[in-house]
Amino acid sequence: MAKILKFPETKARFGFKKASKRTGTAGSTDQINLFSQPANRILSFPSQLNIFDEALLRDEQGDAAAEELYRKAITENDCPADAYCNLGILESQKGSTSKAFDCFTQALKLDARHLESHYNLANLYFDAGDLRLARVHYEMAAEVDPSFPNLYFNLGLVQAMSNDLTAAIASLTRYRELVGEEEARKADDLLSTLRKSLHANN
Image (tube, rainbow, N blue to C red; front, side, top):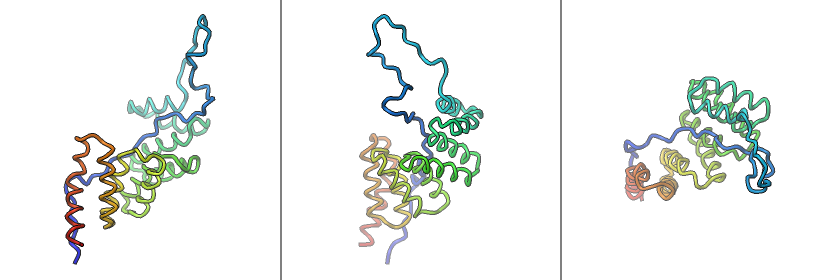
């Protein structure tokens, strides 16, 4: 008979991940080439931030104006997937879960490989108790960026809660490989519990 798995106190998942990078093309004018300019030429820097960058800056400062700026960025096609993603986090923080779901899915419509939106959507499904869809989106995020450690920790929790102990151990071991020793300790108690449970059930 299988034993009931009891989680140690470290079971809390990692939270949302904000989209913070500009997604310009190689020939984008967002960057200034400092090395191919004539020696006597004065470089001119843009006097103000792009809409998305300003929204992100205000968001990080806790300014309520960030929400409207993200909406403006979407309207003006300035990193719209990133803007939808960060808007989804703001909606979630306000308790508007359905609006948050919509924002993350809108981001994925624009960019099917948007890492932060897959990860954040997985977190919403995790919180809603839909472990199957949480797992799907964590796994999709892992395909986009296999070096992002937090998704492996959360994926390991989902797998453990779904009683897929072998997969959970693999995910949490991967998390430990990607982080420093102090952060790795967050997974140690859980890994120990999972290994004991797996051994007891075999």
